[in-house]
Image (cartoon, rainbow, N blue to C red):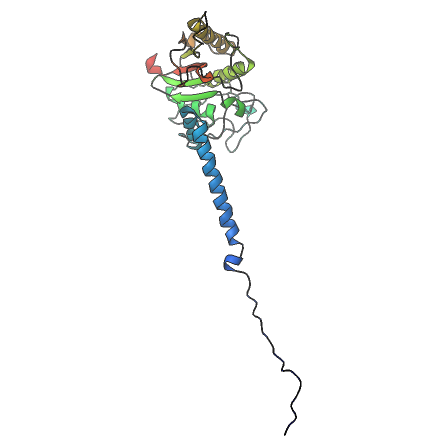
Length: 276
């Protein structure tokens, strides 16, 4: 009878290594990053809806949904215009055609180096776009855009300049402008030089406390409108283009709170030709 061996049997295990795939791979990270980005955009949207007024929301919507083709002007300087002057294409960098396009929508001629003005009343939309940057370029610096709202109405292009809690346009209770307003009016004047439509200036102020003895709201709104008229002319607007200067006191607030700072505002209106 054969002798029994004390040697244990050798057991060989073959382990199959499977490369990471499926949920063990990295594809989920891309999907997760997209999800986090979408959630951030969603919460930012919710915050904007809660923290802005109706007019501000309209301005944001117009910024992401321009109503005219993208402007092909690129600036080449350090000023708010991005160049020395929008009327001097030799000071502007070019991105394919250089300076102002030779024609704008409707076939109208652009302003040349000598400063000839656009004379077509349908250019109000182009001016609005240049002010708010709907086509990618804006006359206004980012810190100035917070004080400007534009809208096209039956009367014309309304350019609204208003106070914010961070900065006011006038000294409180006076018609003395701060530097911010002077800069804003300078830009509005330069934009208005692209047309020769008549201009209206209208002043509005917020409601003063009931206990205040001297409520010179009519005088103050009129004085502020007249101050802006003077600034427009000092920056180059022809005096004959000023059609009217009006003070509305506190009778036309834009906020449901009559004491809101945004009710302190100036409206510069480029009037439509058929209303002149």
